[in-house]
Length: 603
Image 1: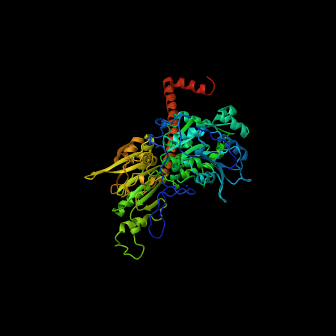
Image 2: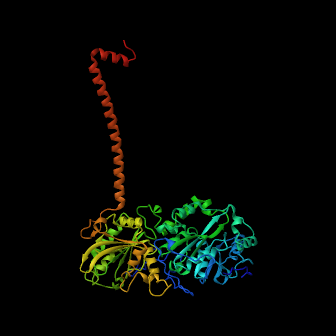
Image 3: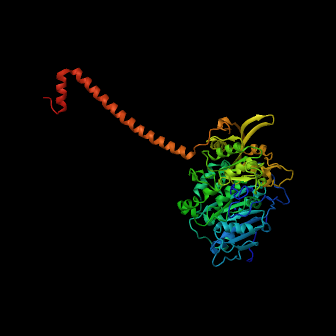
């Protein structure tokens, strides 16, 4: 392989429809600040990227080529967000100039986030290095990353921070995985130096090119928390749905098509944008691969290592809205969140008002409160003008719309959406069936505990077959769509069409989901799911139950206190009774002596 050489300078979740006339709402709503989401584009090249079937996040089934023993063809764009860091940027570019990945397949895009004075491309940099500026009036890491991504031309985007030095095989180590599987998110092995200063660019270039970069940073160490996670999960093979939490912008690569499919980087975020992006990539079916061969050194400790509590205080104010998986940050009993944990879809076509109402009301009244409901129906067929209020043809549909038109957790659409991303789960629930107060929470808990991609709840049986509700894991069906065999090797199935057929029904991905994540059937009765006619009326809410529970706990503590007092009194009376029995056995003289002893003398 040919090393590069120095050269001269050169965006939610389901949202409600709100209008005077019923109109379908897009589901899901793009994350604010991101580029519009679109299908993952077909991968091209002289060879076909195989559709490896990775179960959960167990990337051990993948066999990448050995570094230095293969011929790549995919183009990579290294994107560096940068702000007022000319000196550290020059070091980073010097290391990139010594990479083993072919120069004609690599470009570097530096996104200058309003530096004053503007950053300059140094002489010691990869041949295809260019600088772009974040648009005027925009700022922050989210905008810088997205600006660089929008300018990138590679098949793969490789994020690198402006204070990170890459080892000579770093980019190649990343790229070998992308030639094996088209949905990998690869993470480098970044170590941290004690000081922010480092050798000069020329010294770095020479050391990296000679394979001696490690000698420059012999006092570096890994991030202890990250190292512990990797050790405890066999390099994330056992991390399951939480593998995305190690996603970091310091050195991470992602297929450009996969990045586009989730809407790009959230430009509203200046911190935590890498965690948010990692979560959305996970819902798109990504497998997260940490590669120890992709070594790198971060000059100085990271911000989170120095100011961990402050970083958490900041990020935990914005990430709960975007990442439902962070359950410990969603403890409020009543509030709404931008991205729901579960997206419930109720098909109102051909069903009565009471059946739809009972179904939707029960879904909104459960102990799992961060849910959104989408009701499917021919809403555009409802007339907007004069009509007979009691006799219009679609009266039941009108009543459903009237009832939920101003409920922020309910939206309307004409077809079952192909995906509920970025919501991690969705429940397809037939109208006429009602969830119990804890049904949804218990189903999700089972899916999370066992890692299931699909839980089917058997409702009833007829000549047409078994009627069922379906709890689908978003990431599982996205992964199944990416590896589905459509007869064209190396071309992923476009995500927006993968989960929907012409009539809005789920495509036949269940077999792949079972293979990749597992699936399971349960009975309606064991999870408290009943018909609307048999369901208990929704007359209370979880807040009242919590209030009752708190009152019962206070009453229990009061009764426990009374019980302790009664036990103490019983012990006292028992001692007194024993004393009286002893006195009776001793007779008059014994009582006189006992009384005298208590008074301090014997007579």
